[in-house]
Amino acid sequence: MTRIEKLTAEQEHQLATVRDEWIAHGLSTVPAHRALAVAGVNEAYQAAGLEPPRIVIWLDSPMAGAIGAAYLKHILTDPAQVGDQVRAQVWDQVWDQVRAQVGAQVGDQVRAQVWDQVRAQVRAQVGAQVGDQVRAQVWDQVRDQVRAQVHRACWGQHDYWLCFYDTFRRFGLPGTDRVNGLVQTAQNAGWWWPHRGAVILTERPVEIHRDNQGRLHCETGPAMRYPDGFAIYAWHGTRVPADLVSPGWDAKRVFAEENTEIRRCAVEKIAATDGWDRIVAELGCPQVGSTVDDPGNPGQTLRLYRLENVYDEPVGLLLMTNGTVERDGTRREFGETVPASISDPVAAAAWQIGISPANYRLTARRT
Amino acid sequence: VINHEKENIMQHQILSELNTTGADLAALAAQLDVPTIAGLQHQGDVSVVPAGMVDDYRTPKRLVPSAGVPVVRGESGGNTHLLLASGDVRFDQRAATAEDLTLGSLIVGDGATAWLDHPEHGNTGIAPGEYVLRRKREQADELRMVAD
Image 1 (cartoon, helix red, strand yellow):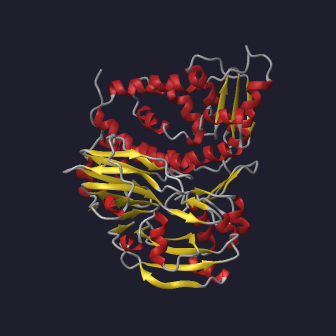
Image 2 (tube, one colour):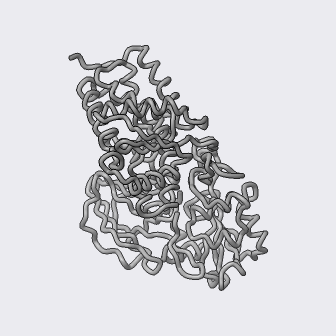
Image 3 (cartoon, each protein chain N blue to C red):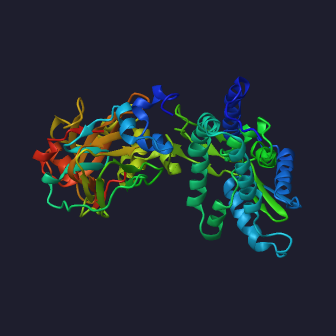
């Protein structure tokens, strides 16, 4: 058998096509093509040596699917016919076999090329920015048996890793057509749960909003929403509580949030144009000490304010700016709380890491 | 990776992402112009503090493995501060609390380099020397750690 050691010009050209198609499937908001999806499932079962499922259940979101899969496992009373989950056969076995085929027939360089130019990019856009967030959102909202189903899902349109094998399948590599069913399902439906004799399939989202870096982001509503209302609210890729986005938090609610990543999202939402100054102004915070240069962070300053009526006792609010410039050219501003007894911004920053202000002034770099 | 994405990587690629092929970290850091610093430096909520500025440095024993050590894991989406090493770099990790900010003691041997990488704050190099890594705290109604 001759190994593929170099792609033809036509095959190289195909890489971008495969990549773009998988990204488009991953972000698709059109209703599932149910007939094609079920045909894909049947083919996937057959490739795994299983009878096609006789019961096909459609649900409206990955959340509903996880709950449905947990019910299916417990409620259906004929375990010989329906019930045990067959993800291992339908997915893992086929996967292992196809991976072995690709390994045997494709040289390292070509594999690396397809990995970089197709898989890595689909993973970044579909896997990391969307699939992982959907999984985390379902995980956060369910418990116990339903949670176990989060792990047992096939991700359908978000099964980005299939694109790697799909590439070789399109090149006609022998043995790779075993992924046909999985690919067809992924191209026509959302998440799905295979059981012996039954399958739960779910719809794709009805809307998805991303920022210019491809991260889930919407300033006015859900960044992702499914037909049954299951939704993800996100601010530049960080999942946030729904009420942070709509109606939005007031300054007091912002400071009650313990996670600074979420707090920062809330502040960015409140002060998209004015930064922290609006928060400081909204609360009428007096400045403490003077505005000073931020040691190790050229061109940036430290400012300290007194924050009253947010916590039980007054605290200091230290405003600082990231040394690292974001991809969009701006710098992130941060506000963090310190003891109200501190009267100097550098002393406040030094207190945060437990060193003396004199030592803090020696900072070489802050990113 | 270096060749076909070179134009993108200067500002925002982090070493741990580029290192998946087992490439030489020191060479990657040089290509990315990552500064190597001996003094006090801060990467978001993690600070690298020269041992002379504190009194809780304890000579560490444990070599930093090639996969690195997650010094602080992000809470809402993978923003981990990862400690990477080339050469003899040792780090003994402690569980920082709001009362004890030290994440661990770090020694970077002669001729060695350590790096901290983070998806938002990028890469920073740590020159040979003795340090403690510390995490920032806040004072709200009670002391708490900064969750970056």
